[in-house]
Amino acid sequence: MSLKDQAGLVKEALSGDEKILESAFHLERFYKKHKYKLWGAAIALILFFGGRAGLAAYRDSQLQQANEALLTLQTQPDNAAARKVLEEKNPKLYTLFSYMQAIEKRDEKALKVLAGTSDSIIADASRYHAGVLASKVTDSVYYQELALVEEAYEALKNGKKEIAKQKLSLVAENSPVASIARLLKHYTIETK
Image (cartoon, rainbow, N blue to C red; front, side):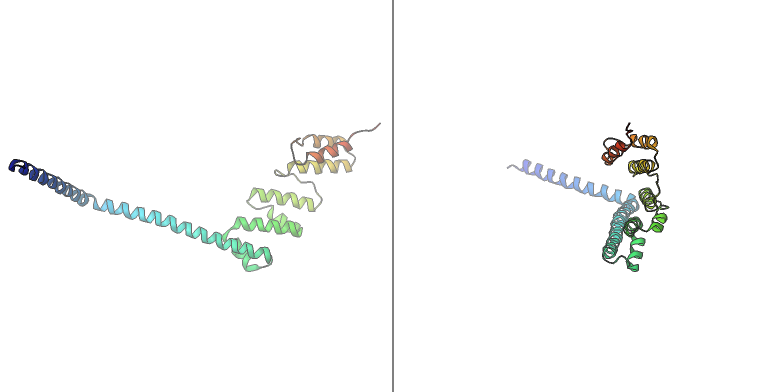
């Protein structure tokens, strides 16, 4: 290798080092100019992801406590401490548990209280079951076809076959209560 080639290699090496040094200066200048913004963004990201993790851990803790309270209530339904924990940690689950208990105990008063709850499904089912316990026909969104069958049955008992036919015709053929409706329709057939 000649002296000229060696000088070219040294020149290339120095030019590469010079470029690295120049990039470092540009980076330092950029950092000095925007360091508060960069630190703010880094802190904001740390707080955001840390907050999300903390909130998720809190929710998991709440659900765990509610689940433990529910398991306790399943074996000891009159445990006041478990009821309070379940009501505080997961009000919707507490409402569902209260509904199940009211149905199991056939507690008409509790069902009437639950009929006023904000959960539309529990409120509707509670209203319907309270009506069943009181032997009253009650309209229901979720038990609509079953309520129609009950209304038809009551009409048949009172000798009102036309009203019964009308109610039974509203029950869909693919309904779970369609077989009961067909059976009741046979009672509306007039014999000569």
